[in-house]
Image (cartoon, rainbow, N blue to C red; front, side):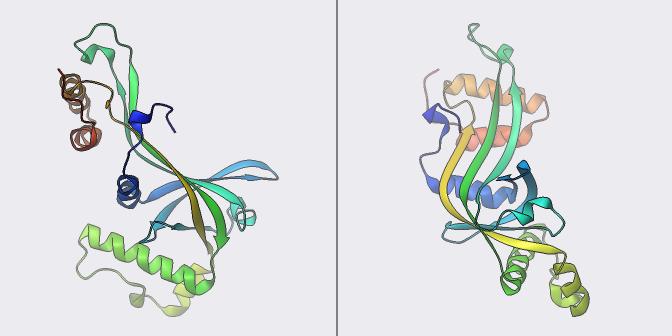
Length: 206
């Protein structure tokens, strides 16, 4: 989490919205073999109290997660900010980015909970891609589906702390932010530019 409080959203629902929108996280935990990380799609519960994910059964992290304190990190778009984009000459380059750290205690899910997670995950993303009709597991051979789910393990992280950083030039004036947005668009970082327009702070001075 960035030490400057201006880069931390004041509304929890903003971080939750971004987690749901991005939907993918790096899962970190300490193990007897040292720190390890896995990467997985995530499902945030409606009350934002838990986040679920699943990993390949062969992933070494699965042996150590149940009952462990873990960290899920959801990252959004990021890009270099050139100091040449500012009107003020006394500036240095920096980096704009979105990163949300979610800490909690992991619990291994049962088979039925894992299937429920997969159903929720696929339903949400099928709706987003506009599949018509949407894919569901009912289209699969049940025995094959069972075999494939046997190759993964589901987990739930009971969230104890949110540590979001949304660094979008909020410490700059509105005029300087517009220059950075133009630079972002010119260098192919349209997603970050769009976030800056919507979430980039409330300073109005030029």
